[in-house]
Length: 105
Image (cartoon, rainbow, N blue to C red):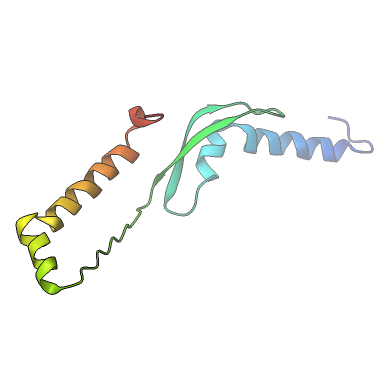
C-alpha cells in the first residue's frame, strides 16, 4: 500500500475492515461477556445487512402474580397447578427463543 500522504490511513482502514468485516472475526468479538454471536447472513458494504443472534448467557424472567387473598392464591396453586403451569410456560418460551425454526413464526 501507499506509504505517502494518507497511505497509513488506508492501511489502517484495510486492516480494520479485515478484522471487523470478516464474519469469522466479527462473531468472535461482537457479544457481551459470556455470549457468542451466530451470524445468519452478512454483507460488509455500505447499506449491507447483518442478521445475527446472540448465544449463551442466561436470561432470568421473574413473574409475580398478586392475589387479593391467601385463599385465592392457594386455590390457584392447588386446583389449577399454577406453579407447575408457570414453569412449563417458561420452559416453552425458552425452547421457542432458542429454536432457529421459530424465526418469523
